[in-house]
Image 1 (cartoon, rainbow, N blue to C red):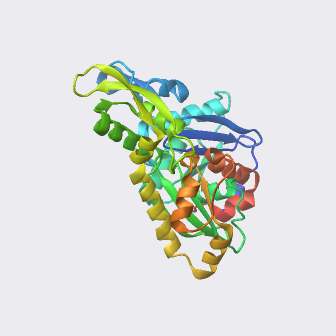
Image 2: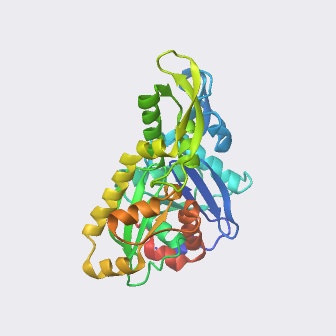
Image 3: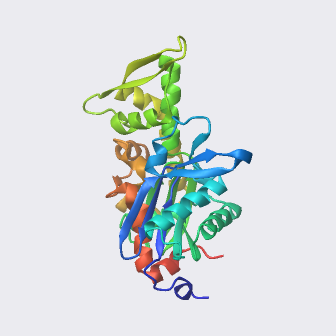
Length: 345
């Protein structure tokens, strides 16, 4: 069946950038309507039954602060659905919210997925969306959507390279004529940066901090290169030795030391792809450089860090956090584009 016939030209079509850290929903003709954390808060009842309490921003505020019978859950881990039941609840909530909670609308949905998902995992994503109320589900690999959102001419016979650094995975793709010529997905992203900061602070300062505090440190003073001016930040946690609460000051230099390993992992993956790119496409990349998208692209100096290692120009796309969502937005409007790059069963 032709994709155009499957998808149709309905105004309630939407796309979901189902990220480990954030979920972005875009409705055809309206643009981005939801951009919230991929977090769900549930109350655990008798028999382990889970009652939905909050989704998104409200649920994230509860992380690490809930009483015994309430649990704040991140249902996606490293780009993969870790809790199918909660993921369905979250997708259903976002679909209904994007259509003003109209339960009668069953939209056609585009969902972006990491390149490295297995067929079983892809099927699970599709089934979760169908069970959550989607009428049809079309899967698109994230590197393609990110490249489109970054404005790269991926349908031309030229090599375009994109590195999309999300919360759970980093997606690397070399795209030409609408297809992935070379690609790689590694389970290193924003969450690994946060965990590296948690571990560093624990080891160096004997201080236990939460993931939210680590994320704040990453955003406020995280840097991949030596900055022009050192930055400092006050953080609070629990002393491992005394068990008492205390505050310490952490610097951008220390934060840079903390995230060294995940930075090296991403750089190594980029080099691996460059080493196997066909010569003709390699010359295009030398000329056009590498484009960074995703929330991880916002780490200060990451473009300079990677450029120094791979000896190529590296650029951060405009609004990198929204690149995948913007790419799917174009697909919603251009059926032919979607037909040329979507994954077929």
